[in-house]
Amino acid sequence: MHSSLLSSDSCDLEHFITSEWNRTIRVMLPEGDEGLPPLPRPFLAPCADEGFKTFFYWDSFYASIGLILQNRTDQVLDILENMRWLVENYGFIPNLYEGGQLYRSQPPHYALLVSLVCDLAPGSIDLKAHYEAMTKEYAFWHTYRSGAHGLNRYGHHATPVELASFGEMIRSRVPEYPLDPSQCSLSIAHYLAEAESGWDFTTRYSGSCMNYLPIDLNALLFGHEKACARIAGLLGDSDGAALWLKRADLRSAAINSLCWNESVGAFVDFDFVAQKPSQTLTAASFFPLWVGLATPEQAMSRNRILSALETKHGLLTMPERQGGLQWDAPNGWPPLQMVAMMGLLRYGFNEDAHRLAIKWSTMNERIFKETGKLWEKYNVLAGSLEVRDEYPMPSMMGWTAGAYLLSKRIISGEIHGFPHFTGCSPLLGILS
Image 1 (cartoon, rainbow, N blue to C red):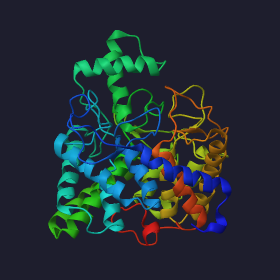
Image 2: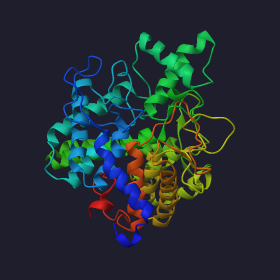
Image 3: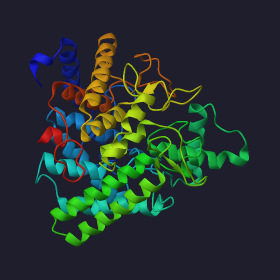
């Protein structure tokens, strides 16, 4: 980073992040957690202090970006090997690796991390083994989370006992939990699907998550298909590469047919039960830009999305409305800031990405100066910690460090665009 562009606040916060990474590294004991076999490598917990202490799927991906930006490649390789091990042993990557919680996944980022590491550290991983695991994870989504029209949805594979246990947790977190016994099991199932989406919980799906073909999930699976095509090609499997590209083309066509909402002017979720696209713009609409699915004309939808969600302090998850849950306004979540900034850069909207980066990092630095910590999420309407919560908010989330470091590199000019994507690596601007 250019030293002339560093303020004392950013120096303090970068130093804090550097020192905190080691406090988030965990090693499962030989007997594992609650009878689970231990992960083969050290893993990165989302929190250094109180809060979440186990392996989380999509948290680990966004923390990996922060690790890369501070040259901690070894930790990223550990994360990647743990992901591969989980797929090999369970057939998918769980939301979190903890006893009694292995009945849902999270937004699939594993293939994108493999593709990124291919650029970051060529020759550092067993490509054939990871390709086999990527194929296996894809089979999980294809087999157990198929929706309609060739697209996918979120869901769960909980037993009745696990479903009931999750229902007890819902009662404590979501005031709108339905009391009608005839609807409880179905409502819990929809909430479980929201938990798999990572957006636990949100009004985005109107309490019926399993009815939707989410735009972020299907964009990520498009990215997965493109990454698999790339790795197959590197392995000399031209037929396999062609098959993956065909799958990506079919998914792109289905997304364009169902999820591109001309009246809204952006990609949105599609309710396949009601057979209509959502009318709500969310931060998930940036995922097609991030993975390169949008045409240049469709990428201009960023104006509509920013108009609906951008505030003085960052990007809202959902538009403002009365009531809501923690993945609604006024909250802004770090991974979605990252996706938006990377998507904007991919299509050359550097000024928009730069503006968001300044807003996000400035708020982070001010609140760090006040509290001495980074936080799981922020109120981006007020630029404060007065967030909509469902549990006591933990400090120092790995993805918050990733989002801050990414924003500072954008501001400094070290990340300035993506002139030559190969595969679906999201950070080639750093590596080129």
